[in-house]
Length: 154
Image (tube, rainbow, N blue to C red):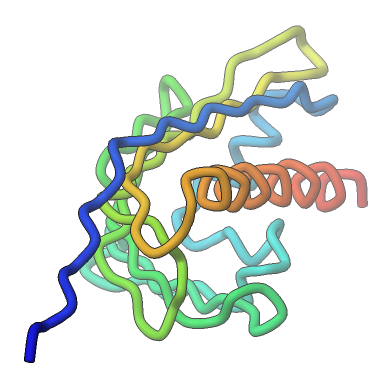
């Protein structure tokens, strides 16, 4: 009996998004710079737990979204340039189709009362269409932007 062949990974996809936020750069950075703060502004993340001195995070995803746990490693963090990057290193019971996923986040000042938040990623797709995976990434970043605006407006 022949074993089913594993589908090859897609070529890399790059997703880049940004949004102007009507909040000072430092205020946005204070909210997002903590590697465990995603649940504070993205409601599809119900819990974030750090390990290994704060460079590994375990993100529990809401069952209303896709469920499961995503494990990420902080790759780069620079408080001066207000930027960081991270990569997915494991998935536990999660159907997310990203493989070799690495994301980057940075903030640039638009003026004294607003900033532009950039969130992007690069990944291969496995088990889904390119369009589905790209939409999933963009939707996640949009939920982050919306949540940041909602949180900072309180």
